[in-house]
Image (tube, rainbow, N blue to C red; front, side):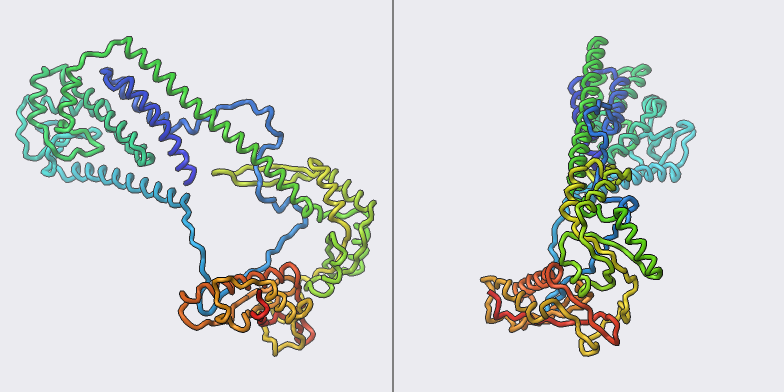
Length: 573
């Protein structure tokens, strides 16, 4: 839908420019058949012009010119990222306040779509009214085979192949002859199809005032063509008199051609008396508008192509930068021949276990995994030697695997393809700086826990969860690292800010809830609850970055345990 909006904006701009040129050159031209053709061409070309694409040389563009944003999992090997479940703070007294922002892009899109719907609904209503008049009216064979009379009609008009007249009419023979010639001209020239086409385009360009001016001029041309047919058989004075007799100030159905309405009466008479435009003037005007129109369309197509190329080039550069930043993560799914043999030996000794490996930068990882990471049991943890790093580097740089990435830009997306050898220095540096240790470990897919969905209370377990350094020191650390905002009254703060949470193990806690319930209205305590959120965020940040947890134990099995932490406000700065 966004693509439709962008297309309509571009088409509307072209329509406005080309119609302005047409109006300047042809507003007084009396070659009405030509004017009708030009107006329909302007409508058609304005709709199609944004779809034109002029091919230009791209020799200087990168060989890989597609777009990026997400790696396709099929090309990343064994990398699996499992996000940690997050639960937002939920104070008892005040629900979490969400920041409300207006998405103006969506608002504009919805307004545009509503405008299209309303415009199309009006068109269907108008067509429905014509159908209603046709099937509820009575035929008037004495007036013609295609004439329908209806009591709701006040002035003659035609649509498609039917002429509609008032049921109680008093047209004389001469008057009816004039009306029938005029309306039959509309029918023979299929003017109704022009109006329907223009109305459909109007539904897409409803916000552009130029479309309404074009429709008005198209209707004027239609009437002028029909008037020309009448004047071939009837004199100007007699025709003008008939128009004056039949003209009414009534409503003109937009999709039909009324014989005469007062609003257009004087303009039609003026056009009938206007001298014929010279052929030379018409030809010069045709050449001018043709050159101008194709120039505008060509310029817009080239500019659009240039914007696409520029955008794709910028996207490619962003994709390169992003791929480089991801290399330390990507160099984690291959083993050197030496470590592959070790892996096979360990797998042979543990045939019923799932054996995996992982590289590390720091040497402190083993104790962390031994004590705090559930589901992993280290089996082999050596240092990566210089020769090991060189061997691993060669493996990646000779790997022919194509890594595909995609990224959204504007309204669409493209693909980029990369190989490790395209980034030789980056791969080499990443392995040199980040692959210092390797751990081969047993992965326990189903840890020995009671039930992941069962959460026990502290008094129900044999061994409570343990956080590095102890929960009291963690609470004190959080308090010492928090500054109370100056606009808060410290005397109104509780002695402890308390949270309830569930220990998942490692750097993961979930189901965090604020236990403090302040006296007074939510509005009055809003600033204090916002401060509690800051404490909550600091608490979660310290768990995810510094303070890992061991799970609780029940009957020798790991279990999920609900805990409580009390953060003393007296230590806060």
